[in-house]
Amino acid sequence: MILSSPFAKKPNSVTAVMLWVIVASLPGLAALIYFFGIGVLINISIASITALATEAIILRIRKRPVSATLIDGSALLTAWLIGLALPPLLPWWMTILGTSFAIVFAKQVYGGLGNNLFNPAMVAYVLLLISFPVEMTAWIPPTELAGQSLSLADTFSYIFTGTSSQGYDINFIRQGVDGFTMATPLDHVKTELSQGYRIQEIKVHEMMTGLSGIGWQWVNLGFLFGGVILLFRKVAAWQIPAGVLLGILSMSLILNVLNPDAYLSPAFHWFAGATMMGAFFIATDPVTASTTKKGRWLFGLGIGVITVLIRTFGGYPDAIAFAVLLMNMTVPMLDYYTQPRTYGHTKTKGVSNE
Image (tube, rainbow, N blue to C red; front, side, top):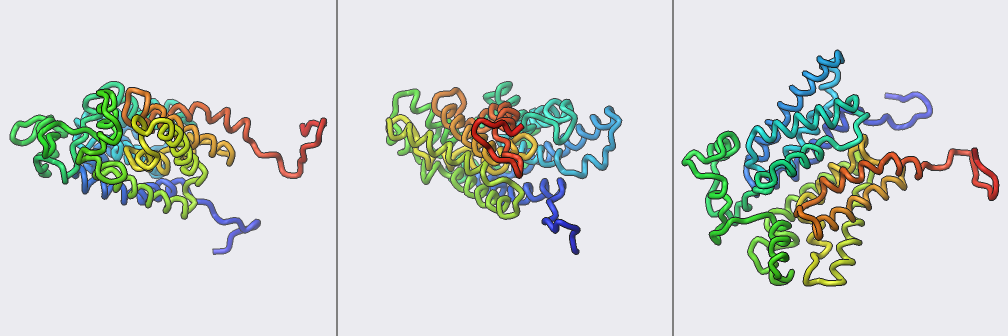
């Protein structure tokens, strides 16, 4: 097909962009399922049904076309990212609550796709984390460390009833092979540091194997691989993930050099928690991120620095969602002050370009 002048490459459609993001997240999803079970896929299914139904209802209330809007894939992508971020055995009604809140209050209240200030998936995550901190931090141990295997029937039972088919609560499945309740590596480090242990002593624990703990390094590598696909397809602006990773590197390196016994290394921060998912799939949202080249760098750097600061000094073990939402608020300012000079205009000393 021959394009009309100026023969520029045809940009990706909204639907194509959304589908590419979903496809690129599959390696990370596969790693999550392998290490933490099929509950992740159930969460995605619940969130997807909720998002599509909620968006359809709101569009009818607003007297807007339903089919044409749903087909753009934005609601589906929001649900997909929410499902990826949630603990695998989160109660079903919490997934519905967070997803519907994201669609209604973080997207449609602002006027729909293209008008929202905050990333809807992260709004849902923060709402649930603040409202239900116990359930939102109830990650099960990776399969290698799980004391009890989790069947498909038990997974459904935990999500929809709160107990297994034998009547055990979630704390039973969270018991690791060593007999005590396990947390994520980031949560484990924060807890142990508060009790006076040093980083080297904390890393002796069997769950801390590898760059950032069993399972989590592979989950992050999966999202990193998918993120590279997004950059190759030009679906995401490379400056934002580069800025996020650089911000994490610089801030964590400074802290680690100052006191390696109390602060984690940059490699651990890079491959722990939701770092790669946040850098490539959350922060790069074209609606809520900065649109200028300089602004994208500053936006990404801010997310990276804030993530490390909250992880280190804040009350939450992972901080990607908070960092993204805080930097979402700065986007209008970043775009205003980083606009490139208009083509054909030169900056002359003492003379205004206006």
